[in-house]
Length: 285
Length: 338
Image 1 (cartoon, rainbow over the protein chains, first blue to last red):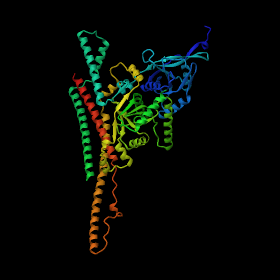
Image 2 (cartoon, chains in turn cyan, purple):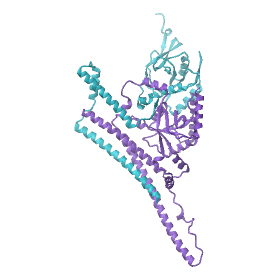
Image 3 (cartoon, chains in turn red, green):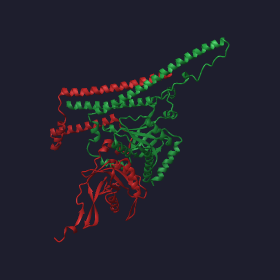
Image 4 (cartoon, one colour):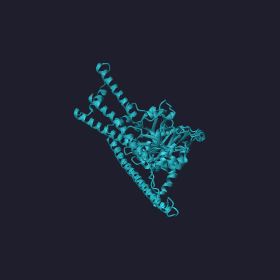
């Protein structure tokens, strides 16, 4: 082999173990910015803020849009704006640093390399996230990329965008409830008891489903699936074995505690209305 | 352009302001909810605040964006910094076509202990510049139970009148018929999302039938939460009894003074009778220089009203959580029996 190692075309870094995780607020913000974009603009781009953990997971937690102008072969980014906004954000939360940038649209586009170059100077190995607001393939595709450089000897020839896994499981959104976030208009925020009711209903439906499935299997109507069977047995096994007497005591004690608290709080309330009455009476004197 | 439409909305709002229909609904974007939650949660248990931006349309107040305030320090120079930050942020957000109209502020709270004099003062400050503003309260400690603890509040007009004159004597309150329930008005919250967001969220919703929210709700241990609630309740009760003692003291002083005035008057009258009999000029029947005629200052009722509000809030929370726990306990029981 005549070629020595130096003159081989090589990617740097050759492999990436980066994964990204996105906070729902980022998606919401991008959508909002896209809806509010200037008339002539085709896409919006902006900065992603967050943190990088030791195991290479990039946590994207915040974002802001940066105004830009784009023509066929050049991109003008409002760098002053970017820096001002960054300073403002850091005042609130100094732990959030630049982790990359986002753009709306499907996949990587021509101007992307230039913008990516700019962000590479701001931070090492930035992430490029694309959010397809146009639903090009009829689905909401959100992707994250990093670049790997193609170099010959010391000379950099090109950069290649490589997709990295993006975690879209949004626990934060689940906490708020998708029912609220996915509809156009919700008339009322559910209070605690209503929320409990929906959860209970869901649980009941799940139990019914499983019940039906088990029955069908026993009757021989459905081909049994070992996996599901194992899950069911695991679930049942996870109920702790407590002596019935001890369990009753436990439940009853807790019930009593709660009843006591309820009693106490109603007592306090009665006291309040009583004292109000007495106060007004005292005023009349 | 989005700008002219925003402006025309503002003009509409300005035009209707003269009629000023009462504020009925606060309509919050999902984005704002998430932003508030993120900010409040990241800094919990420290209490944080931020500004709400949006539009005032008729009887609906639309909150379309918000930004957080940095945690404030006590020093004065930093305060000027804060104002700068606020202006800078507004300017930047305007550049990307965000509604540039302050409609209020949000703040986090711990177990709903938000009814304080500071909140009222902040509200009055905002009220001076903005006719209709709103305060959104978020309680991060309750979100762990699968509750979206968001509240939109405003001060009632009657209360603001009284507060401006700083008059919280019993007489004035009775005149206005204002009790502690009437200080804060809770405004119903509506949540709206743009079609784009709604499409994305429908796509991204996981297939699993169980969400984090359900897990949180079915969590059996509520004791720490209840314990702290009761702790706060007891503290508030102590405060309230202090306030009551203040009033008792005041009434005792008042009646003692009245008795003193009576004896003085009687003495004066007998003296005057004697003088009349002797053919002299009678002395006047009141003497402003005498210290017993100086009115005893009546303590303000504001504090006791606020404490009462807090107590009722804790009671409500205890009731709510206990109610949830009952259903959970019976559920566990049923599971065990099967």
